[in-house]
Length: 426
Image 1: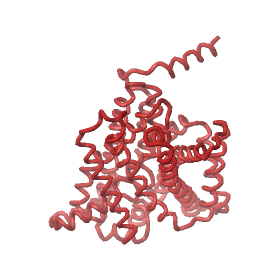
Image 2: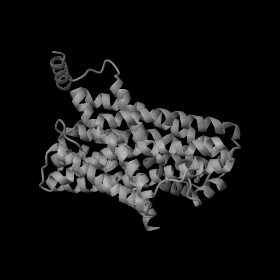
Image 3: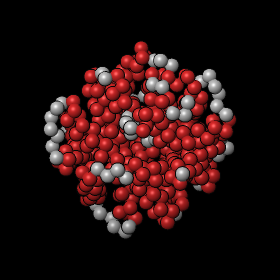
Image 4: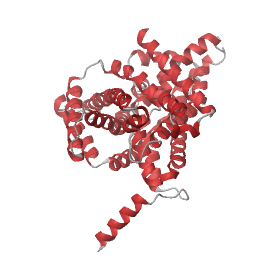
């Protein structure tokens, strides 16, 4: 009898949209899941990359951080919501722009996100191996075994379903927030002015614009969580029906406020501690800010905590990017003409991800950074330009036309893409 009641209740929940009157636990879970996808390993390099330009470019980037992040991801969410019920981003592209465009975007979407998943596989293996060897003084197992165990562990979470992934990520966010806060506060007594030494002399306008042009992609991709936006939008539409756009915007805005406040506090605490020369040294050594600070202070607490923080950061970003990569791979399989059963498709996707991630993590190639950079322009085009183009061309999105934020998002997208292409060719 209870089983029947539960079944009726589940059907009721999936067919009757929730109201906006009360913020639910699921809304909080999604807010933290978005935060978890965006704030990962890239955050640990952001103080170095953003701080090298000096005080004034960093201040301008700090002011632009929230609108750049919020308006872009809200646009992509609206784009997914404009499709039919249950349609993910690859299906919405096909619905609005046709079969050929749908196949092309699905292909680009997959190859923009999947290399990042490979990078996280390598980074995770390196982080755990180094932690075992240097902090715990344990001889790590062979790289092939270690990488297989770590990836299988994360895929075990994946096998529990999308909601389990989001919940796991939201739980991981709490220690990560505490760790970032701890590090930022720990550095306060060590503030020496750092980047403020560059504030007394305003840069030349041309030099300032050039610095901002090259730095905007760093900020954009440090807060990027486009891989999970499709799943987020689909779930919001299922839960809230016609109210999905309003609730999605609320969740996104809270997630982005949390991201920007937390990360900028961490960034400014780091750049007020280290001089521009020290930031340049960290970049030359290819170290994360945590590793450089541990060496700089010779502090055993940071030396022990840094790998654990990196492990949490990389793990939750891996899970968030897995959702986007698997979505793209499934779309490619379906568009190739094969339509296996949903369970079979899930197993094929998981098996492919496991094998490729394991091989790459075992081989530890240095070319992965280049692959991530090559995927950058594609991510920027999908995140910034495609939703704005759809607003102009797709009737279902006509109600969003004429907003100033559309011009802002388009400009930032063009700046990010041109800067990334310039960096590749320079």
